[in-house]
Image (cartoon, rainbow, N blue to C red):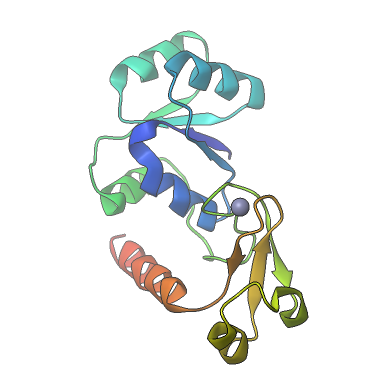
Amino acid sequence: MRFIADMMLGRLARWLRLYGYDTLYGIEDDDEIVRIALREDRIILTRDSALTERAKKLGVKAFLLSSNSLEGQVEELKRLGVEFGELFPANAHCPKCNGPLRRASKEEVRGKVPPKVYERYDEFYVCERCGQIYWPGRQWEEMLKMDRKLRKAT
Ligand SMILES: [Zn+2]
């Protein structure tokens, strides 16, 4: 399953990427969203019923979400058959740009992360597209906390 999310679903898009789903985000024009979804066989995620109708007329699959909250949206996607398996970094896409992540050696990130981080951590991941580096720091802990919360919501 690959997705394209409308402008109202930025937070959800980042989470889908972390869970390993190729998810486009940041396209403002509805026609463009439908065109890309058609061309790349992506499911549209939207909170806009007009966009959903337009997509369906053209044979493009769209999931219309009604919830305002991330937890609610994840719940709706689960009901639609979207699985939320192992969280970041196994098979994750970069939450920033949707590029693929790969494990990076400690040597490779020397000088690219704060010295304290370099000293403290041994596990690093780098985005092959934008170069963003990830490690199991505070942000990571927050993601795991959110993951537990999302799982509980089932
Ligand atoms: Zn990236």
